[in-house]
Length: 450
Image (cartoon, rainbow, N blue to C red; front, side, top):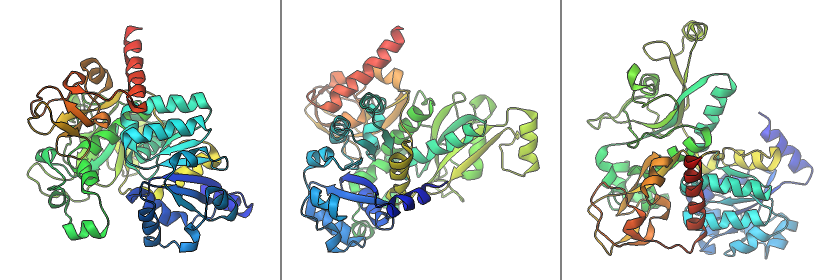
């Protein structure tokens, strides 16, 4: 409860947390807006494929030109200004920088950036949760081997949900389920970047004003991002994924205790200890009041009569049996909250969530009948969407993870609604992401053999 105080102390001592950031898109720009207010954090460098666009975004959120006019990383580190460029390797190698924030949104590039940062002794805050979903345990392990910290990004829903799970367990409660909210209808699975804004509830003009990427936002709508983030939550918190994918039960916040309990007790879970996503729409498409669409939740259990009596005495909302209760954070503010991760990693040397196990995976599921010779366009595109599966099933069946279903060519047809398998594609095996994925898959196989 004292991270801000600690940041103030770092600022007063003239030793702010020194940070480099790769990628200045929406998430990164939101953090840049807040970093101006956090004197205990110094962003030494920002690198982007398009430095002028990064500078434009910095200007958009209130940076004076002089603040991002350092002539080099060395100049920035000594002057207190920020250098903007396009050389991520120089950023990850700079001796003064303590933490690298990876927020490119490109999972294949993100893995390479993380691994190089580890080699150079840098902590990583990985905003690119798409990478965490298919190699998070591998990245966390590589960080441990290098003696550095690998962390999810506070402000994104996985870190916030994991924080709620930690709160519940730290209080002594047994966690029954955790997850996030979403706006969901089954036909959204087929949404493309051309249809996303109509479903999302924004006009094209509003989306352009906010410089919103239709492919990225379509990944939220078509179920890919909920699957990705649910996988991250499961692998951090030791929770299980539904065998046939997310259920997306409909409900508001007060409905969560009835929904997020085992089916044998009237809920939607296969068993206790799972992840799922609550839809803010009824099956008919009507908006549900007091929804959790933009937030996260944890459902926990009053497993003794005394605890259930306490729930009743303090008038908390439970399920109809009085046994299950939820706590929640109704909103997440994305990059505006990232300072919590920077302070936690930089000062406390603690991640705001990191994968401990490989329990859940995100398979690439065909959006339509796919033909031999087609090139998969990855998350949020026209060809595949993400489907949450238990990692043991995904690996055993040879499913291609969504994070690697980008710019790969089909060598056979794939029917609509089916997972794409390694045997269906000509994979690019010459990437750090592919190699690390194979290491993570081997850990599943080794555990099964043991």
